[in-house]
Image 1 (tube, rainbow, N blue to C red):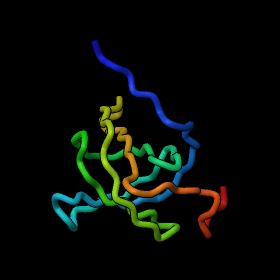
Image 2 (image 1 turned 45 degrees about the vertical axis):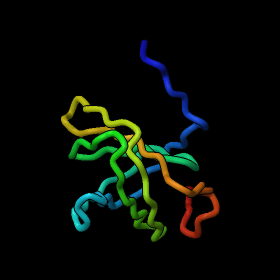
Image 3 (image 1 turned 120 degrees about the vertical axis):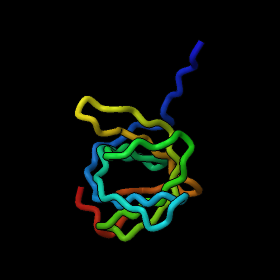
Length: 103
């Protein structure tokens, strides 16, 4: 039987420009936007599938914030893109405290 994982906290819909970089191949980047965020993670849509537990480096372009994150899930979307859930590693983000926050 498959166990269900529940989120630790509610996500907030927030569209933020992000650059994704895979840590396996530094320099390989993709610009995307978040769909939602929480203090411990984010969901975004990408053109490439990602492996569960893969490590990525996220650069939040508006806030000049760089965070390592681990892929929690990757699901194929109807339009051929992929929704990925990420968990930030070693940090908790309070989005309202960031200097460029205008949400």
